[in-house]
Length: 384
Ligand SMILES: Cc1ncc(COP(=O)(O)O)c(C=O)c1O
Image (tube, rainbow, N blue to C red):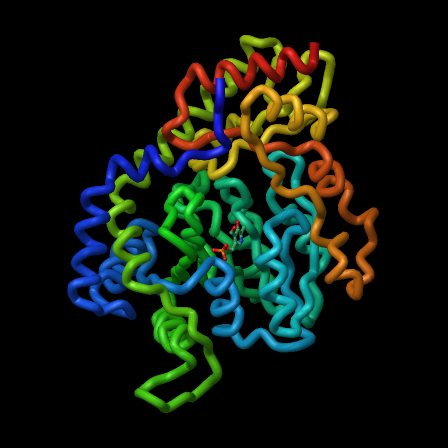
């Protein structure tokens, strides 16, 4: 059996007609930049995220960059972020000359450890940037308490978490000062190329972000501050507008797929209980299922398990036609480009371990139960 890591074609087939009609309308109008689809998408996205405003931009990376620029992050400022995330969370901070301050993650959620955040706050800390990794919200209750105590804004990197919510019911991107999203094609809401967005409830920031994405320009050819070309184009917005009404349903199916994995891992005696410790009866650590967090909505952008002999397992699965990926193999503090920060490797025990053990399995909405069963059986075969 062949099970690709993801398959975008099946989903496209189901909405092809609507998308092609919109694309053809744009080509006929020849209006490609900041037109009706961008405005419509912004309105619908803000509503979807329970936020007052959304600003559509050119990528998730540019969303984070523009958000940091909007609060005037400058050289020498410190921004706290998890050590375990996609590079863009840190790269954007460094590009502004600011200092990425890495902290370790929790072994249960792979999200930033609020206690570790507290320890890293200094008088140079200008923002805290939690990442809702793999589609599960970071502990925003504790992070918000820290943010309020020290009066430091939170910028949510919600690039992997559109539609996720916290146990309080609040949506990803609606809890910090700003939320940043990516619509990279393989995201739960994916465009036909690169695009992203920033959400906020702050009207002044909203106005500033709209200028920021267009070179800080307002009115035409007058520039009060330096921005960039961070605009989303109409073609991306048209694809996203057509996909957005399906997102809750696609996210729901991803959650069901995660439950199917759990069932088959238990049936195959690879998992006995929800735990983050390896034991004789827990050869696979699956995404932790909290009793008290039953109400949170993890949207399973990725379904990541932890295993021993990860690289050999990856090869074994590939030999059996199963696509997997590693998010992420190297902690940010060990990246060559951040060697100037002289981070202490011993400060990141969880990230260091998780980077060696983590592997992402296929979780796209269209995957079917026999494929999930096949994957778990092959994993059992490997550990026998
Ligand atoms: C956590 C995180 N932050 C930032 C980004 C950057 O988004 P983009 O690829 O759209 O620039 C991504 C995308 O992969 C991401 O997963």
